[in-house]
Length: 446
Image 1 (cartoon, rainbow, N blue to C red):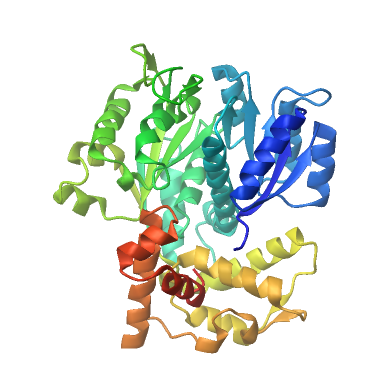
Image 2: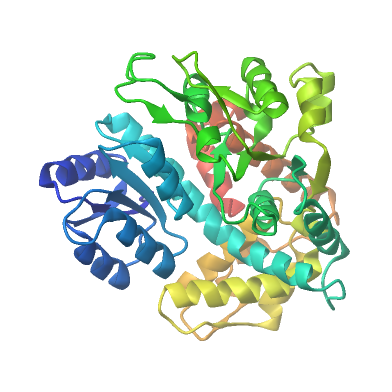
């Protein structure tokens, strides 16, 4: 089984380092250890990591100093602050300086694994979205871009118009088109850009823990609540809260979220004390929310509160002319991270890439390019270096076979999204066995 990623554990307490390492190794992560900030920075300069677990209170360089240096040298690295001094101030300060999240001591192995899994997934999305982000930035600098799709120019124009306001924005589009990139661009161009941008992935959180994740909880509020924690809404105070895959929350949580949108007040689980918060709310979904409203699965009042401004991100198959720029950017970025010369992409390989339908959108495109960059042996990526070379690449909507493949890939992606990447549950939902699902994921480069 392939590993989930590489984690750097930074803590001056040897027992904590060993315990965290054992837990994460069982979860199929690769581990490196550092006992202080200097050792951590030295290892991070030589190796690439997906996640760093960082203790705030260490001798020598403080956790905050190490955080700043790690974020400067490795922007894609997701840093989880681990601290026994979990106060609102330290948590907000860490998030403000670029930490992904924080984990208060003591914590359970399950809590550690869950937060690292989410952090690794967030880091992967960061890399996948980097090229879309570059494209959007270029669109926002000019309205007259040669060779750019009209769909992305429209997205750029809407971002520029929405950013200066405090209006809620609903971002829609298929899985992998870069909805979080749009949300980050709005935040970066807004008056809140110096404050926190906090993401809540509604599609991966366990339903029973969602309320605590969003609102925080008091110590003893429920079994396992060994410390008081700050919720994501409170962490985003003064900044932007991004609710990704908003359609996944149940109706009870929809009602609580509606009150936040309307009244800008929250109350931690287990507390009766209300707190006023100043947050801008952005949300995203790959579902048809209006259809969900008609089916009674999503509250109509919340829908209209969230959908003041609507930005629809087009799928990659509707902007195939953007592929050369995306491929060129990601090939260079990935090659630099692997410390190797960037290979060229042959005309035949580029033609094959532009013929494909890309049901997984930019995320699927980057997976294919990454495969080619890692496995190609020469200085040029040819058609044979692409993972789907043997099967060919049907032109978009050119045949019934292509349409069936598109439909199948779309259903697989939806199932994986619905069950937070759990292949066993997705396979059961699709009515196939896990081995068949694994083969189809490999076949379609999902």
